[in-house]
Image: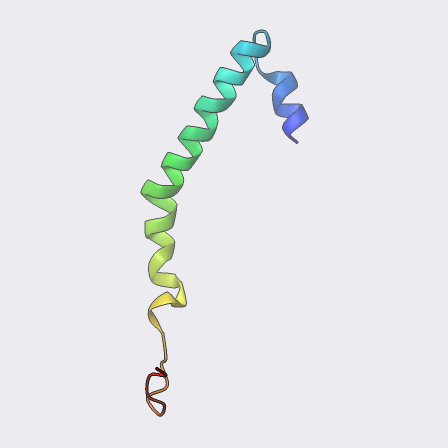
Amino acid sequence: MYGWIWRHLPGNAWVKALISLVLVLAIVFLLFQYVFPWAEPLLPFGDVTVDQGMGAVR
């Protein structure tokens, strides 16, 4: 898949590397701005159960 993307990007190796970096940054931005906030309420990270039976070990 990455080879296919690399072959279809325009320009020489430096231009392809720059375009690849911009694409990766754009994908990370979209994930943090839209996908992760949408998915966060669907994930069970807030359902934490702690056993109250044992005290802290010192």
